[in-house]
Image (cartoon, rainbow, N blue to C red):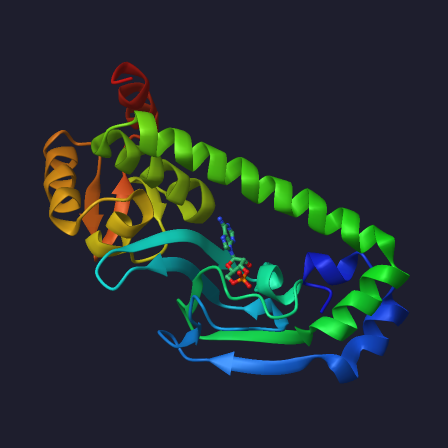
Length: 223
Ligand code: CMP
């Protein structure tokens, strides 16, 4: 539990005392944890794995966030009795979580106000990111959004190799499309352009940035 920042905000004895109220659940890759519109009264803390948060209208899917171990989700509907999930959650890898019910969570916050400050800070960070996303979708073209996204993926999951910066997770064109609000065909077209320009290289279905500085430079020039 100490790997989860939310729990680190509490004294170890408090975290220990929570053990009986935490339900451990495991989801295989691809399992839908809940669907937008469901009612939900628990919040989930990711122990290991990754969870994709998305909204889907039956045809188009938009990824709102990609959460990893240490992150939490489901707090929005959990906070308000009867509220619906504002988005869907799917395990992007084999994922283990702790689930916590509203009544326990509320008691915890009332007893330990520092937790409320932590959540507020984190919520503001999510809002900051969402505002950035609004800006990008309003003003940047698809090619630029893809380039920016690749740099962010590299920042979050990059490993230095002799050939350049390798994005250490496999992402499909479809997933990139969902991240940047585009269709798969457009991502394929832009990827072909970026490959021809030497800005990206595909290695065993993974993306390598042979010269990330050049990608940053292009990004600045094109805006
Ligand atoms: P809830 O509405 O219960 O169910 C969907 C969850 O997705 C939501 O709670 C949040 O935990 C999470 N979520 C929704 N929008 C975002 C976002 N923009 N960034 C990060 N997480 C989000």
